[in-house]
Image (cartoon, rainbow, N blue to C red; front, top):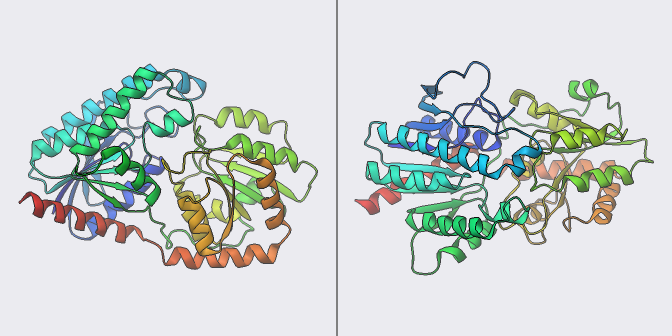
Length: 416
């Protein structure tokens, strides 16, 4: 089978979406499929084209056994400017989408299917155009539901812009042959917008965890030594530092625990909130903020924590699934999730017996949950073991790749 994959990120880019798609591409190639990827030049870490990749709008090469066309992403600056300069960001997405569409159009077919990854939402439109160009079905993979997330966090406020993106969202869903989402919550969201009696097929294909790459390790890591954490109990948030995450809640919890010398909070990641969080940490001796680590150090970073935090702002569970939860469980560490009741993450923690979920944006509840786990080392160990067993039974990268291959085959048969 020949597949055309349209994604905003691919290794060596460091974006979480890129890690997910890269593993799926590896799985597809490993199953003998011919995969061509259209993506951006690496830029996510510093919001500028990475060293060694500059000087050309388009570069062709490979990744593993796949062929790859990389195009300029027109990145915007990090920090507050990224949130305020919505026009600049929109133009960057349009430029990336236009170049990616052109690259996909010029790629020699035939293809059996197109898989387009969102966000950005505009990649759904590009995927539809490429599917028509190559006369094959479109699978639209939704990692986060846009514009819902942007509206909820206040990044998108213009009524006219919201109406436009909601129209584009519905139009993209209806022109897709299948839409894949990460949870039942997201599936219900998409189905409600599409309406009854209208395609597409909506399938839940949850993100996976690589239990071979992420294994339980001793907490006395080199990373712990580098950060000077000593033997203190480490409560960690590891992931994107954006507006969807309740990172101010983590800061508030650290302030409330300022009198505990045995406890330290670590925020590990990158994104638009990094600079202001780093500034806050300068005045809090029990809060450490550090940037993204290379992917090969991820298991070590996860093992450094005694407790992992998953803080998602209220109302976002129907639009986003923090897949970092799966990684923490694979590392054999318990999770405290501040998240909507009844959400996918809350269900997983309850089913696995591997952590606690508390109401979103409730600092009292979060502090109480952290106290409970910090003061119960044996309970933490038992939760971590149960979480690891759950992760081992969860979806693997290869099984998710197989699901996509089967879905494209099913859709291709319908197309004749």
